[in-house]
Length: 404
Image 1 (cartoon, rainbow, N blue to C red):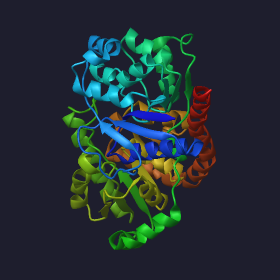
Image 2: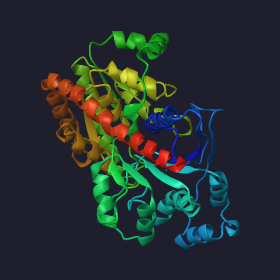
Image 3: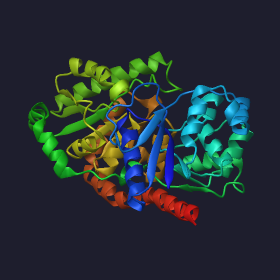
């Protein structure tokens, strides 16, 4: 069987973690399956875990709806180079899987971008291939697009990360038409983290080891200015508030004798370490982790932290998985949905409420309830793992049906 993962993102440790779990999960079901990937990247795919084992291409394009429909009806006549590359790459696949990741099938984005991500799905459907959504986020939907609804209703199985995504989908297409959807969880909960192997890697980083020895408690923090976010990209006031709030908060942690490790989410062509360095220059208790460490090491390091403050979605997933109390900064649907589904919404801070004062208040609440939160995370982990496993179970069923 040949499976093509489409709409995958790279150069992001969170996407790397979820994609790793999906690939390993597929090979656990059947080690003979051939996996190929279409990445949505404009730049180089670096530090790829499966170089030489998995074939991949990168594509980006912005098609109009009539252009997509024409390419589906007359593939050979398409003049869009990347659309033709995708169709040629997908040819002879048995199944197409929409890779895990953030919500692009959403009216926060232009319709042309949604069409780009829907294109490999509708092309696969036109060729009679099975189609499967492997726990991405989806929505919100504020506009009516019949073509989108038509495509989504024909997907064999849609597994989503959050209940809020399913609610959006039902609101868009109607509950009676939506018989193909279930809610799982972020696939990163399934990925194995070798504590022994990562401990050896940790011991080789003398600077990191020496830094950790200096502090009894360390907070792992992820920060972004959200200039990549379609909703907040032009909000200069928010950008400055984020910087001011975290600098003052980190100074406050320094006064309490707590160390801070800033954890880059991005690597390769999308490296965000330079942005984090401004905080290291302003505060003496800050260590910026090297961007070369993969998702597995990041999870290992987070397990050694006292707490996590996450303005990046997957840092909160990593903390939850490693049972480290966290303060999620809620900036969009995916993290809001996870917190609501998990019963930990009150631990977080909505982005419009972010300030050094709210960070301090939430951190003091975390300290006060630390034992309770550790216990809750321990108890929730079995549930989170089970919900994530739903995606692989549904995929297994579809694979069996395909072979039959």
